[in-house]
Image 1 (spheres, rainbow, N blue to C red):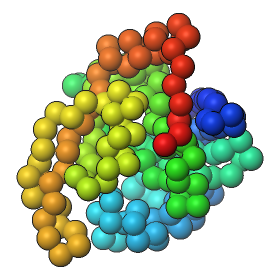
Image 2 (image 1 turned 45 degrees about the vertical axis):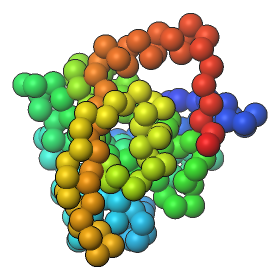
Image 3 (image 1 turned 90 degrees about the vertical axis):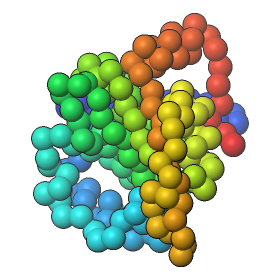
Image 4 (image 1 turned 120 degrees about the vertical axis):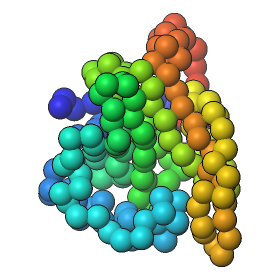
Amino acid sequence: MVEKNSEFWEEERLVSVRLLPMQEKYFSAVLKMLEDPKTREMLGVVKLPRYESFKKDDVLNYIIFNQQDEIVGKVELFEISWRNRRAQLSVIIDPEYRGQGYANLGIRKILDIGFGDLGLHRIWLRVLEYNHSAIELYKKIGFKVEGRCRDQSFRRGKFWDQLQMSILAPDWLEIKVEEESGTVYFLGK
């Protein structure tokens, strides 16, 4: 896998990321991110993963680095179905770096990899109904709500719905063409 770079301006500040494939030397940073209670809640993490789980044939994991070469998160495509040309998306941002545009850029780069390099047709995700900031981010990137999985997850003492969202390769291509033609967008809140 090749390194992927991306950069955008956010409120007069250049924000850039690069993605590198997951390696064992980065695993402790991922475990640290998964120790965060909010991250565990949003992902439904019950037990911490072993490094081997990141090396499956149907999973692509990338570590997100910022412009200071710090690890700020992880983005992955998993449950990849080569026959159906689809994958599920997950992103984790270290709590120290949330709200700075890194999830936006990391997701955009993994979409480039998924649709461009891998030839996928559909990338989808599920998000808890009360994770409003994530839902808005996914919509801003171009994901569409497909439906609602009722009472899908038990959190905070009750059942919650999850929204299922996806983006298709033709949608992503259209977004990329608009961006390259000079349409400006901001990563800020």
